[in-house]
Image 1 (cartoon, rainbow, N blue to C red):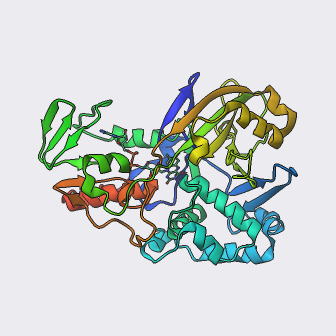
Image 2 (cartoon, rainbow, N blue to C red; image 1 turned 45 degrees about the vertical axis):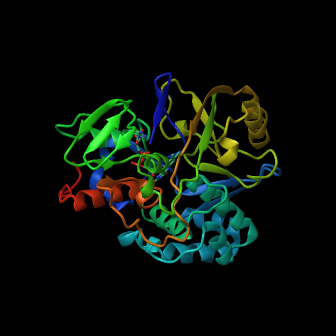
Length: 377
Ligand SMILES: Cc1cc2nc3c(=O)[nH]c(=O)nc-3n(C[C@H](O)[C@H](O)[C@H](O)COP(=O)(O)OP(=O)(O)OC[C@H]3O[C@@H](n4cnc5c(N)ncnc54)[C@H](O)[C@@H]3O)c2cc1C
């Protein structure tokens, strides 16, 4: 959850929202103090060839989205959406993760959505899992669907990094060493290059590929497959659209269609100088060194001549963005908390989300007999 700053204004590295429905977010994060604002609970898709837009929204929470959604997907898929939503429960969002599940790629076909709806859902979940092959479990998609249905998707005014920064501020009597890559771990030892440290307990809370390198037996069947994403950011005096929502590419994956979605973060948290940022997101191989000119040409097809006047701001890239959990794993968590005496924490022990990362931290606390805090600080 990283945020950079461009001329003093925060810019998230990759599109990232905080789901207020996550039980761990309710336990650990003081959302009110983040000055966060919510994205619209709908997505708009664009066919770049025809310019046609379609809206998919949560009609149970926003009845104004009912007719546009039915116009977009038809009554049959509208009912399939409703069934999907009614199958989720706010009381236990993670319930699907404990059940047998195909991959998202296979599962979306089994649910018999019309091909055009399937295409939109495939693109949406490629964006959420940062995996064009949709190898993640469908049960994870169900978990995400539940989180979207039962809460808001918010972005803090200081960017998504404000979330871990808030957690860090609550640490008392702790030393945090930044830019100190750990090179070896043991049950009571941590090496940073030549320097050895000794501790009572060691908790390893690093990304999956780093854990696999430092503690190879932690990987077992869940070998890391790198997921990556880039955003290419442009600046304009006027936004191409005014709402805080994603504009999803219906032709994503076809030739010259690398941009998966576009959003305008300054629609949510205005830029102090009244400028607008247009953020184009790419995933998978397309995220490796994105071709700036090709991206801008794509956006010209989306938005017309106005894109000619946009100036380039920056590109962000996140490597090793999310863990890979074996698709045949049908449990909420991976069984081992401790391996070779080292306590393991991170989204790769559960599922690729903030909820997954915090659940794994709670599980480690419980394992070490440390009580969970009673509520938000
Ligand atoms: C672009 C993007 C968008 C996302 N969007 C969402 C979303 O909308 N909703 C959602 O729920 N989840 C989302 N996620 C997933 C979520 O952010 C992660 O699952 C979660 O942050 C993982 O937390 P973690 O503590 O397991 O790992 P990390 O946050 O990756 O923490 C691991 C830490 O280990 C450090 N480290 C690495 N190597 C070493 C080393 N050798 N020595 C010491 N330290 C090391 C790293 O610097 C890092 O600080 C998104 C992720 C990305 C990348």
